[in-house]
Image 1 (tube, rainbow, N blue to C red):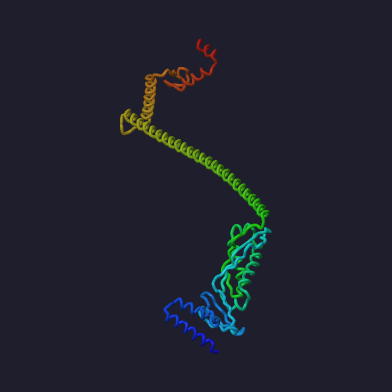
Image 2: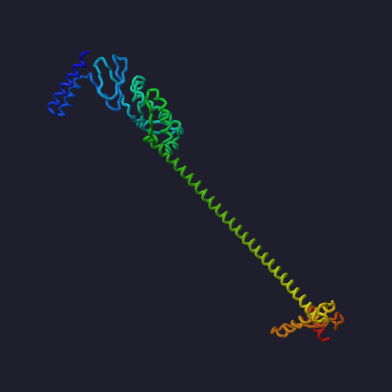
Amino acid sequence: MNTPRLARTHLITSVRSGVSLGNRQGLVSASSRALGRRTFLTVIQQGHEGWRLSLGRDPVKLTPGLNIKIPFYHTLTVLDVRESSVNIPNLPGYTADNVPILCSGSLFYRIKDSYKACFGVSEVERNVQNIGTSAVRSVLGTFSYDQVIADRNDLNKQLNVVIGNTISDWGVECTRFEVQSFQPANREVERQLELQMEAERNRRKQLLDTQAQINVAEGQKQRVILESEGHLEAKSNEADAKYKTVFREAEARQQQALMEASAIAQQVENIARALGPNKDSILPEHRKLALTTLVELRRLEQLRAIAESKSNSTYFFGDKAALGMANEAFNIDYAQNVKAGMESRPASSRVAGAIA
């Protein structure tokens, strides 16, 4: 039991001799030689944890730093608790659509409970690699080839969940799984997949071309509809404009007729008042005489306009009283009727009538 005390004494003696020489390199060399010669001291590196057994029992956790390890009495197991990875190279497998493939990836894990990793499983790294290999094969069988090619993240997430649930009982955490390569197992399968992808591209191209033709036809349809609606709107606007124009013109003629009638009535009233002996009282006879006078004045104005006109038109003026039909001096309507009747008769009849 005095062995640790002798070791410490020897170590202190070596350190003092090194300091007295003033050489730091000598200090390190002396310490290394002392630790190399004596195995009852051990150093646990940072990021590692150790478990020491005394005669195969009573495990004691050793933290990073200098710890005691007595030969033949202590057994030491050191574990790396940092995040580590194991490679799974060129793993053959089959996808859900029976495509043989080769898959390789990296499994990243971290030891969370060093006690379980040390005493709950033997060779934790090797078993983690075995679990990762079997999980990759089983999970790949649930994905089709196109799904893995389109998005590997789903495969990585599923592998992370499956592996993590399996190795969690060993105190190990699966941080992530990354698929590095994914390819067909042989050239024949790759050629078949290339033909399949080419057929898929052709199908999509045909769908896009068909959709483009449909879009063009739909655009032409919309153009024709919009043009017809535009023509309809234009015709409707033109009809509305014509209606409003005719309505306004009718209103204008009506207003003009009312104004002319009012003017004529005012003229008749003024003439009747001028013809009457008393300007305050107008008799009906005076109004009738005033109306006859006004009509005659209008006829004289028409005759004056005809006389001053430079056109070669022929006008007929007759007196129906001469025929015993009426007692009107200038019946232009009657003359027009006679002229129309003569034009409708045959030429021989007109000549005979003229000779007679």
